[in-house]
Length: 160
Image 1 (tube, rainbow, N blue to C red):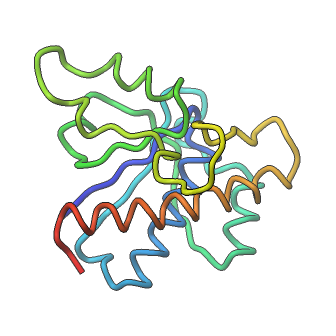
Image 2 (image 1 turned 90 degrees about the vertical axis):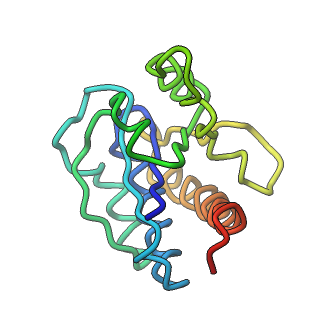
């Protein structure tokens, strides 16, 4: 089983939305029995809480499904997941700070927008402090990026 973890700050906006999108792509390609994904946050702000209402609204409007409670990223995630994908450079910095010195934990780390084929910022913007529109814009960024991430994983893992 290949395991992918999406990580943002609080695990109520970007990373659970990426999880919902990626799971939908996996179902469409009938890969959901071979690839598993989850999401987490670098902070402990929202542990145990449901995703932001605006995230859930996007999920519902786009016909996705999401059953998730926020959790914090831990050192154990390095061993549990094959790919760890951060939403922005700050999240990536926090994740790297937890990596064990002297091993290759950092080799499985990526920024989400490394997989976005639309030129622009390297960070997925955090829509938390904005309006509803920001959540839909983040959805579009994540859809492009998740599609390309899945293509990347399929090529690296030789799965169809």
